[in-house]
Amino acid sequence: MINVIGLGYIGLPTALMLAKSGLTVVGTDYNKDLVNKLNSGVLTFEEKGLSELFQSAIDKGIIFTTEYQKTDTYIVAVPTPFMHLSKKLDPTYVLGAVNKVLDVCLSGSIIVIESTISPGSIDKYVRPEIERRNLIIGKDVHLVHAPERIIPGNMIYELENNSRTVGADSKEIANKIKEVYQSFCKSEIVITDIRSAEMSKVVENTFRDVNIAFANELAKICRSDNMDVYEIIKIANKHPRVNILQPGPGVGGHCISVDPWFLVGDYPDLTNLILTARKINDSMPVHVLNRISSIMKEHHIKDVSRVGLYGLTYKENVDDIRESPTLQLLEQLEKNLSFGIKVYDPFIKSKIVENQYFDFNSFIKDIEIIVIMVAHDEVKSKNNDISKLLILDTRNIMHGDNVYKL
Image (tube, rainbow, N blue to C red; front, top):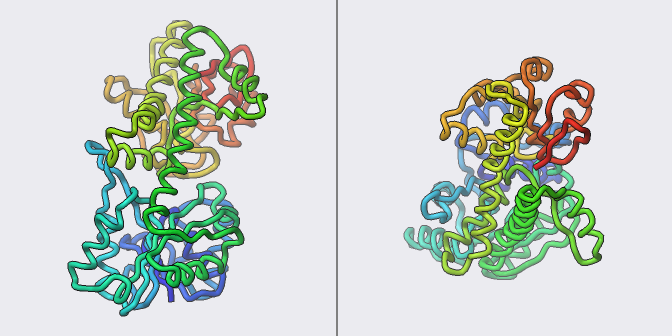
C-alpha cells in the first residue's frame, strides 16, 4: 500500500493515477474539510480529465483520510515555500510530514519526497531527523527524491507522458520506486543520486524563469522607445537557433516564481543572473500598473474604479491563483493606497479580493479600461463585448486601434 501525503495540486492527481493503475493507495491530508469533500465525491480544484480520473480511482478503492498509514511506501507531496527574507527553502511542511511518517512506518520503509526542494535539502534537513531517532538510513528507512514535473491545465497528460527522475542512495531502492511510477508513466524514468535529482528540478524552473525575464526586459526596452516587442520577437525567432518566449504581466505558480529563490538563498554570491531574472519578473506587475496609469492619463480617466482587471489565476484556463501576477499587482495597489479597481475571473467562484465580480457583463458595465492579465479562452470570445473599451492586453491576444500592449 502507498500512502500519499498531501492532497493538493500534485499529491491528489498522483494518488488518483496510482490508484487507477491498480495499486492500493491511501491519500492523507491534515485538512479535514478537504478530506471530507473528497470522501463525499467532491473535487477540490478543477482540472481537465480530473473528474474521470477521480471516479476511476474511487472505483479501484482509493481512501482519503487525515491519518498517516502504517505501511512501507510513502510519497510526500506537501508545499515547499521559501522564506521571504533569506530566500531559502522553508522545510517546515516536509519535515512535519516526514516526522509523522516516521511515527508509524514499518521497518525498511521508503519515503519518496516529490515536493520541490533546494539542492542538498534532504542531507541538511531530512537525514538529521531520521538519525535523531536512532534509525539507520538505508536499513530502517530509505530516502528517495522524485520531483514532480506537471503543470496545472495539463496534469493528466503530463503525469502519463513526461519523463521522471528518481534520485536515491541505492539503485535497488531507485528501481523499486521506478516500478511504482511505471504503473502510469509511459515516458523515460531516469535514475540518479538524490542531490542531482534535487538540483535538476530547480534548474528546470530556473531556466524557464531566466528565459521569461529576457522577454520581459525586452518588453520594457521596446516600450521605452516605442517599438513593438512582439513583432521584434517574431522576427528574431525566425533565426533557427533563437526561441525567445513571450513577455507577460509577471510570473506566477508554485514553480517558476518560487524555485529560483532556492538557488539565490543557498548560493547568494553565485546567482547574479538568476537573481536579476527574478527581480525583472517580479517587477512586471508594477510595469503593468505604470501602463495603466499612462493610459488613464492619455484618456483623462482619473477614477481607478473605471479600470477592470481580467484574470486572477496565474495562467489560462485553470483555477490556480498561487503567486498570481494579478494578486501581486493588487498588493502593489494597496501599497500605493489606490483602491477601487475591479476584478473578474471566470474560474474563481468565491470571493478572494475586494471589488471582485462573478458575472462578466456586470464586470465590464462601468469600466473604461480592461486589463487582460490572463488569456482565458472566455475573453478571446468577447471581442464584441469589449470593442468599445480601452484594452491593455498583457498577453498579446487582442488586436485593434483600442488595444494597448505591454
